[in-house]
Structures are given as structure tokens and as C-alpha cells.
Length: 469
Image: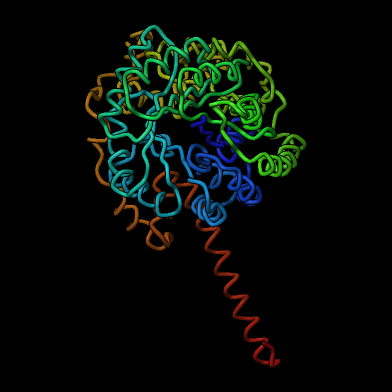
């Protein structure tokens, strides 16, 4: 049986290249061709798509999911889920996690890829329980990074814990594209030897080595690879789907995707990509290879957002300096893998350190919470200057239990709070994750709906008067 491919262009492709700005209309316009190609699954939701829909696109993310499901009848839909963070940037109570999983599956998701930014197994437990309870397939991801403690043995032990937790499959989530080809072969070989789970590899082309890494992983027996249709591939995104489909044609690894459907989808995606190049949201730098990333370990989505953040402040010339500061901040904080929300937190702290000219002069609330243990256990000892830690943490108690154990149920209280605004459980979940942004969006959405209903009533009345139909 050949290697299977998960198509990422409708989620991670545009998240990595142009900050998740593809509209629902654009996503749906290419979904039929992608559905016809014969993929193992389509990654279409989760990650930053939810936030971007509400915050920047004036769209309902739940409506996007339903629209995709309506078109995609042949292929399983997959999402990325941040464990106890769900799709947000803090830990949410277990009842919110449970309800979000339930509604994700009800609205069309088949496979939920769950990860924790710190690889803290405790932060995955509720999402796994809920996914299995509601009939979804649960894939748990290892957040891959390199450091003195992130060894092959570390990942094998983690994978064995994940298997015991009840995962249906395992993903090596190399969000920064730093997994070297030789290491990929060793890691996949070790995981295949020590677990019985199907293994998927997710990486990025930022450092210029991803195709080689995938090839070595395939040689070692990886079952599934994440790829992206050519218009949105490479750069900070995933390798080209067509390249791997062609490269392994006729071999025992043949993915056997339909090239006619792939080309039809690529034609449409090419026009969409050109639009974002023209309007400036797709920075040409995102399409370039940067081998320094192998040192900086900056994920594709993080890099595109960093560039936009610095560009908006007229400080894009500081990008290299910020990238050099990121490994220092990461070491200070106990080598957290650079994946959401830790990537944004470490990146923001690095930006502040560079722009203020003084390290840790300004510390975001999220870093404060991290040092209080609110995100879970740091992978290694925190080496940040104890005086700075003392200044941030003070005499507060640092959390050592599973952070969500300290959270009271939230869903019903939010439902009551917004009973005049939320018209569905999905609306309540949007408010749970991005309260202020979602409230503003829902107010606009439903006020427009009311205006439209009034206009329809006026038209009906007008037609009755004139004898119209």
C-alpha cells in the first residue's frame, strides 16, 4: 500500500504563507476538485482559521466547516486542535473542550489532530476522551523540536504514553521544518519499532530540506505525509502534493492521487495565490527558503505573522535580529516547542526584547501565565534570570497540577451571559474562545439578518399590494 497524503492547502498552506486569509468562498471554490483527488484526508479547519474568520474576514468559522462538508462527500475532513487550548490561547475548562469536540464532529470533522505546545500529556487527555466519545478519529501529535532534552528516546517514550492514552494515530508535528533527513529516518524507524500506531509526518519547507526529510521518512515506513497543492506549497508551507504524487508513481509508495483533479484544483488555487501576492498579504519572503530557520526554529505561520507584525510597525528591517533572539528566549523558558500558542508568546517576547532594547523590560500576560505554570510543565528547567522570574511571579504559587483541574465549568455560564446574542451552542463556543471578537462579529451578523428579514417582509407586503408573486 502506498504512502497516504493529507492535503493542507485549505488550512496550513494559507496559514503559513499569508496569515490564514483565504475566505470561505475561496476555500469552497476549490473544495470539489480537491475532494475528487483521492486524498487520505483534507486538513480544512482548526489552527488559526477560527480566529481569522471572526477577527479579519467577518465570517462564521462554523459556517465555513458546514460549507466544506456539503461539498466534500468523498474525503475525510481533518482539523488541528490545541488540546486544552482548543483553538484559543489559554486553557479552557473541560466542559468547553468536550462541547467543542462534539460540535466539531457534528458539523463535519472526521479526524481531530490534538497536540499540546509543551507535550504535556495531561493537557491532551480531555480532548482525546471527547473525540472518542463522539465517534471521531483521534490523532495525537508530538510537537517536534530540538534541544538538549528532545532526544529520540524522549519522543519514543512520549509516543508510548500517547498510545496508552487511546490515540488512533500518531503525528510527528515538525511545525518549524527543522527535522533533518537523517533524524527523520531514525525517529520514524524508532517509532515504528516501539508503537503500533499509524504515523504521519507534518513539516514545512522553510529551511529547504523538507522534501529530503519526507523521502527519508517514507523510506523508514511513515504511513502518511502532509502536502500542499503546488500554488500554496514550499516556502513556509508544506511540500508539493504533485511532486510527491509524481515522484513515487509506479513504486510501492505510490500515493495514487488523481492528477487531473490535482491540476484542476491547482489552476484555481494559482489565481487565489496571485490575488494575495498582488494585494501584499502574501509577502514574497514567505515563498523563499531560509536555512537559518534550522537554527532559529521559527514555524511558517509564526514567521509570516512576525513579518506582518514588524511590517505594520515599520520595523521589518529588525526581522533577522528578532529571529536571532527567539532561540535565546526559548532557552530562557525551558525549551518549549515553537507551536501555537507558545510560538506566538516566544515570538512576541523576542519582538519586545529587540524593539525596547532591553530584554524582558516588557513581559506579555501570556508569558506571565506561562511562568505561573498555567500552560503546563516546561520541558526543561527555566534558565531565565531568577531576578526577572521573581519580578514577574512575585510570591505567587506556581501551578504544578494539570492546569485545567483548577478551572470551573464555563459553558453554561457563558450561555446564560449571552442568551440574548448567541443563537446556537456553536455561537457560545465562539464566544468562549474569542469573547470580545466573537461578540462584535455576532452582533453584526444578526443585526444584518434582522435587516434582511425586515426587507423581505417589506417586499412581500409590496408584492401583495401589487398582486405580485
